[in-house]
Length: 459
Ligand code: PA5
View (tube, rainbow, N blue to C red):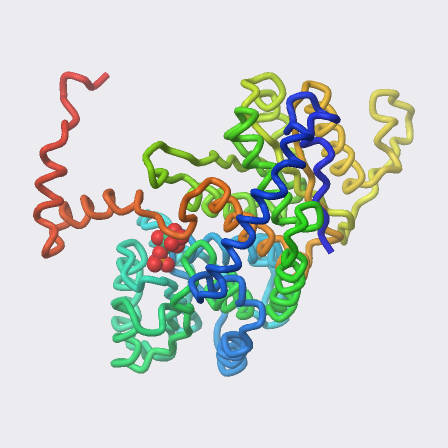
């Protein structure tokens, strides 16, 4: 079971932290935020809460994996935003990069998983050159079923499969809304298998739907265990008692640090390579959900920053220690590391290195994390630590659900809707206009009326 230690977030331990009185007073604001999230959940608006108990979706995923087991050497995911960051976080936690380098037998016959989450031609071309299309499955993941980047990737892959004389039905699977968007009718018309993203589950809250579960299960990850962990965390959050609700405590402390202590920058710093991409997934969740215009005008939104311990101790930590007093740091700690390595003693006595010998690498990593938290505290800079007993499917499920529920609470605390993203629309409309999509001529004109880059201002 994961734990959240917030000792260093409060001003009785760390002078720049959240006021203890504010923390106690926030209980009633939290109860209201929790009630609002629960009400939206009961009304059927927030589907992510219920994904852990959605056995029908799990059966879709497991059924597909069973039917295709042994047929593919490579799985290539086409998706972006919430349709890629969750799958990447799960893969890199439970199937870290070195796993793709193992031979098939050492991978237990499971395929490699590649995630294409951009339209940079250099990456797409390289993957298409590397895989053997005859032994490759392409997952096209898009909630809306119409995202330009994913659709462009899909059209390229589709053409390549047809050129190679391969059946689309055997090499493509869609994960999309059950009825909306462009992918579903294509699936229906062409017999391409398609798994569902429930209509009430938004992109960045979809990691526990087939969006995250299908790519994970295709590489042998125990997705039932991921859901079990997520469900356990969701049940822990069924209380309005702030001190016993880990997602509530996280959300309220970050919100108070931002709104009462001038700390709008929220760093997430795993001390664990497998958890590195959880920070990138969290960045999207926190930023796209909470960066909003308030209903009455004005702007809110903390800025999430990803970091990695111990690597960033030699980079961003200087800024965290001596830069502006505008940050909180959340550490992710892992208690047990499999394959830990003991640092050997040198046979000759070198005093500067002697202290390392006999300790393990995991011990060094965890000591550095504690030392960094202590150093920040000594300078009045608040932090908290989320600890996982180990990186496994169940604990990952807990962690993902903690941040999703915390985001729902934070949205209510800030007074905004955490589940839309109107701010990303305008750039999309301009792109459609410039690329010549019918019906977007006005957007093109609006774009062309903007100040354009001037040759006089080129250095
Ligand atoms: O959180 C969101 O809704 C977005 O970031 C989406 O995940 C992203 O835009 C991709 O959308 P889609 O899954 O519809 O292709």
